[in-house]
Length: 289
Length: 289
Image (cartoon, one colour):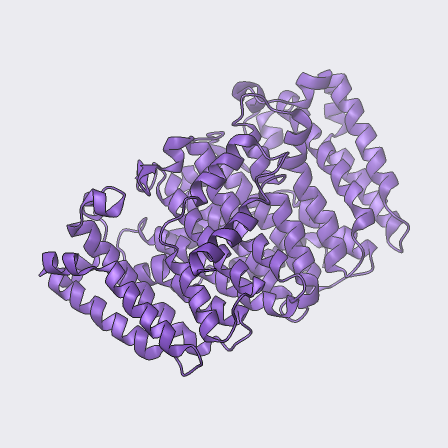
């Protein structure tokens, strides 16, 4: 199976534990709606790729970890879209969860997905508990406070936002969880994999800022120009468009260089090159220039 | 130390891992505000009492589990108070989190507390990972979908609410986590402790309904008559006031009877009797009669 099919199946396994008789039906439907059909699955693919580079393929531990990282990402999107934050009507080319259902259900879906993500790894590691604390700590660090997604969102609520902490917390932390979690689930030492997550996370955030500024709604599947409309700090404000693209390319080069010597290093580096082209395709680079 | 001091210290340990340099200051302050000063700490006290009955005293595993259960309870209160749900201005005699801070911060505090609760057990069990999956599953089951707090809240969003599922999910589940989690953290078989959590949870919910209907705001530390104002299903609607009090007393008797034979059984039964009198004091019983 290709990585997308693996991730789809691992997500289905997780979600189907909620979507059972006895679950309030609108909640069950909204949880499924928030997860499927998915986005690009950047983070779980990265998790699988790092685990494969460490020699772990077809591992239920890795697959559950990858799915949980995606569930945590989905949770953050649902809460981020709520009226009190971005008030986003559209996500992945269709109504956001609070528009398709309602605000109360969207609030609960985010909560349920956080719980489900962590439950899903606990379940998967039941027969390998020795690896569970490390994976749990990598995942929870990435999404809570003081330095995870929640902290990143909270920087938006402060009078002034330190850009680096903001970006690291809001985006970088879950990328680091993807690389570190992939290594841990593969029973490997995660130390060397941290920098890859860090660089990719920042590159991804910069690409997101660039796309929000110069891509079209059709290209993105959601409204563009939101950062400017919401007065959010972005890489464009900091570096200008040319500087942002240059920084993106530097970060990708650093990410590729950071891949430690291992059996699967070269396929992973090739994947990173492809991902860079997907994030900022030639057409957008020309538009930026 | 008495159980309140133990719980306070365990909560402080957990919260202080968020409240560090690098955490957005308003988020850190709001997390602390949501947790301290605490309420009656019914659930963590129950968790400690069950673990003590199983022979575990002064156990960091038990104390972390108890604190995490309280953090999950606090998370549910913060989200439950939000404008899209109960729109509660007051909690524990002072402004609710979204009134003291703002709605965005309250949303993030709830998320952060869920993550912190599960991170806190992962950290505490790092040297006893064999017990972590069981505790994690007991806690996550109690707060997510299909049968935890989130599911309970979601029943309020359905056209019709099955009363028993609603009560079991919204209140009972976390009481079961307190008894089962206490036994598991004490490295004991949790099976016999499930029924105690179930009966106490329902008793607590009924007492809450009775107090909401006949206590004063000064007695409760929050506005009364909210269930009626919000059109919520309650035990009073189902059984009438006399029937609700009778059911409460039956449930407490069943809870006391369910305590399995163990070294600490008698002190635990006495604690349950005291708790019943605290939940529905003589003065309220006279008012109900």
